[in-house]
Image (cartoon, rainbow, N blue to C red; front, side, top):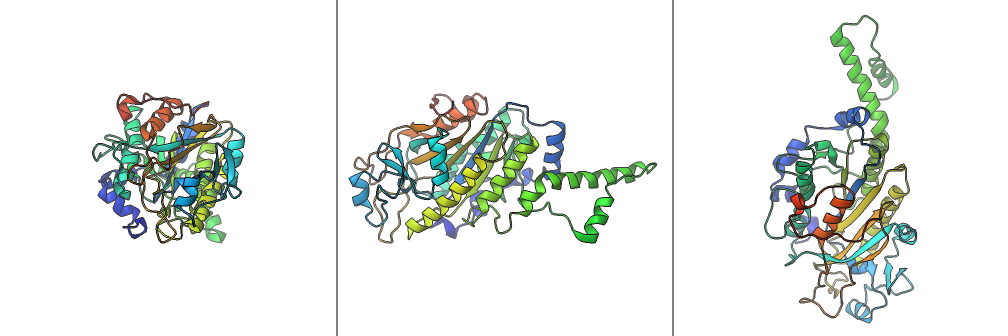
Length: 401
């Protein structure tokens, strides 16, 4: 079944995260703004931004082995020629829509982790995404990997924030749940009514304490809108629900940038873009989505995040089959590339390019376990021991400077 026929909300229900999502509603923009003023993120503390590409992004048409004859023969109507892609060496090129990330690559701030997957791959969207978000390939888990990090590191729900309409499973812990903050909801009335409402925030001398407290709350609300409201108000038509709406990812990352600039006490942000379940007419659809991904990410990376180290990881639940189907698309596959970018990243390739001829029943063989990517980010960005989150035996990858 195509992912578009199923909603993200049903995914969360299926994954057993409804209670956690409800708990996340107990914190919001007002508390975040207050914490940004009173207990801002310490100088030097890095920030991790997780970008989920829902639907199963085709890795072979993202980091394209255009020089490989097996690629050209496997998908004659979908394949890109060498002259069409953005050359990154070793016979590979980025999708033509990824011009901004090509600049990050040239500047040494983009790492491409090749052939990332997990043992005994599952072609189900829901099970595979559950595995990626819980970091537990063996059996369904009630906690996400960032949720377990929250449990082990201070139990602060504002340390991890989702800019999606509902909380993704990755932010749900056993004792602590991250915050799901909506893009909309911070606009205030304008005109005469807005002026009158703003005036209510000015406490007068000698006012009773309850009236003064009410005035302070109105003033606090206006300060919150002043800090976060502009990005929120600019998110019309982009609700971040993973359906591939134009501008959805950019709207989410605009808010992330404002949170970072404001000193929000958040170490992890979760954002998403959907629509990657390309069973038919893939080439134009995926290139449009990758162009949107590229514009949002490259704009964010070169934007106003200041001197703080910010690392972005973009991933999808699985790649696609090597051979194209009869509808000029591709079906659910296994391994794919993970993109890691930012001013704390050691640019270049990590891992070997999967073979297009030595396959596992038509699927690529994974060479890098996704949990090793997580372990590297936990250690190098979140300065945390990965073992309580991922279990023993993980290895660090040469991803970070």
